Image (cartoon, rainbow, N blue to C red; front, top):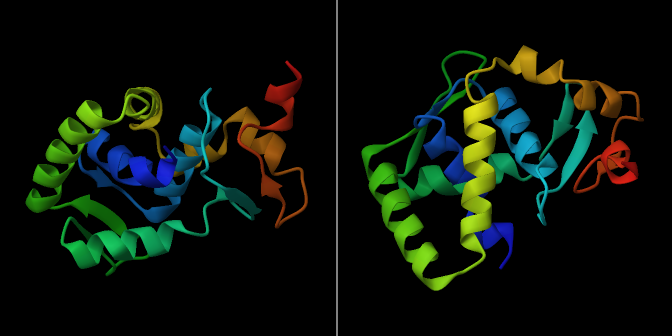
Length: 154
């Protein structure tokens, strides 16, 4: 199964307490997920503030349309929050996927690792991570692979 079927974006939101302060931080948490060992089809492109998933906004819009997340677009940060309906949805989704899809456990474990290690960090702290800084030395617009080139060489 692919990440699209596992919805790591939704799982990351859920595992970080149902709220992420700013879409920039959401982007960086998704990048941390991409960097975890294992297969993923999360694609990032290098932007000014580091790795960026161009599909995340569409994904969030879909979740808003479903009523499982809401955003605060009053400020610049665009906070994303899981709704009560979203919490119930994720709970049922995890139970069902765990039962029907053996590969889902790997995705869930990767998300939990990212949430526990990076969930409390600010976006600025996430941008300062050494592998993000390495990526930022590349040309803007560069497609970033599943894991950074330095990790693949180790």
